[in-house]
Length: 399
Image (cartoon, rainbow, N blue to C red; front, side, top):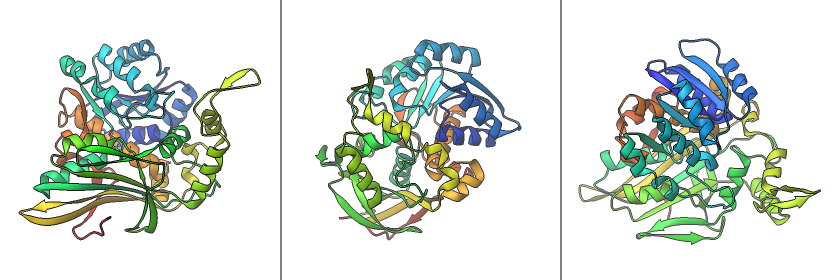
């Protein structure tokens, strides 16, 4: 058993902390730390008593020296980063300086550029190798479980995977005219960026939300899905040997898209600073401040999510298709952990990834993506901690 330091105090952090407390075989104490101590204390109060100790601390995750001081004071075995993607590098720097392992759920993104890719974090690989430390990158659901699903398919079901379609469907209804299910700033930057897909050794760029299909999701039904850029395609293109095409699809309601288009047209999704009444503000950050906090959506949200991967390839010289996915119910997540399913499906894998590293099952020096590890213990833990997976060997496929 050991300690874990959780950086962040939003909806995902709440799920991570809750699940760490459920897993007392691995975690004997956690510390929840963020810039706003009252949020950390509120999470601690929700967790109640139990065998896993809970501490809180204030820290500015942009300041490596503050992080190093906190790590040295608390002395965790691992740091679980569920703060903003902008802060990935400062937290990785602190882990190197303090000599502890690291896990996150999303790759680094510069604050002033809507561009997310793994190059910045992959550049840390040799430094973590030299220090004998593990940096587990992108261990949420997508990225995260989708990479584990891919490693599972490669290990158990295929001699050759030719294509991967990652499908993320949220059929939840929170009742607001417009709200995002995770950090509004990150969500809107992601959705309004150019799309891309991997094909025949290169990435092909598309205009935002310009490629649409429909898919009949188990337990959810027919939904429109849109092609997006997503970071796990970048690592899967390297780590799934011989794959020729990878695409990422996400559902959006027409209501969401209409609101987003209006906000974009009037400049509210811009990340370029403007001067308002003598102060410099970023329109998207202002929009984030007036939109509902995703952590508050739990008691309002009904419906289900379905996230998974469709693989096409060959086994024993014969064509094969395979679909593996998880269905998660928003209301059940709230009853168990006080969160909606988006936070739940991100927070559970983050805890599992940390446990994999702490127990040595995924202990390998360097900055690495989840599909580089043995998927079997992770797949087993998914069901044990609330994200059981289902599979189909005759799925509908996308053209």
